[in-house]
Image 1 (cartoon, rainbow, N blue to C red):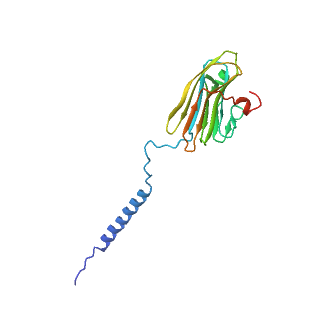
Image 2 (tube, rainbow, N blue to C red):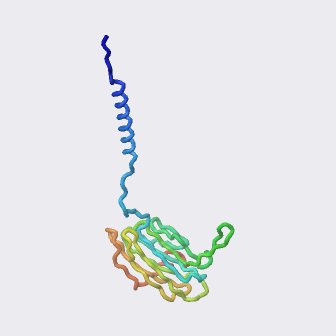
Length: 198
């Protein structure tokens, strides 16, 4: 009697292993994240303005911004769609906070306004000496775009006196989003124009 030998079970096993490994490879390939582009970020803020003054002073200096359409952003109106007052510093009054039962003091007087968009039109940025002991103050300021990072203007407003307003800068954004006509010489009062009293 003749005996027939068959390798069908072995071939079946190899085929099933090949199908299993191929399936795992396809699943692993589908789970690979797309390669990120190095250094490419879409920031939530297009530009920002910062002011800083004597860290030991109790003086309250207000940063104000007015964009196209004339709506003023300042301590009592902190947001205008694309313009936001992110920090309203009251001098040394709000420099202390409590953490785990311990009082911590941060000696920094600082305000910042963010722009999440820069629609075409004219912008005016001012500072206002709201309250304090009456001493004149020097205010450091900088205006920057984020992407690309660029310092539009920076400097010092010297000798700001109580209840006075000083224009830091005015500029125009054209229809392509470019900041042009930067001017720091002309005073454009916006405090009384945008609200009923300073």
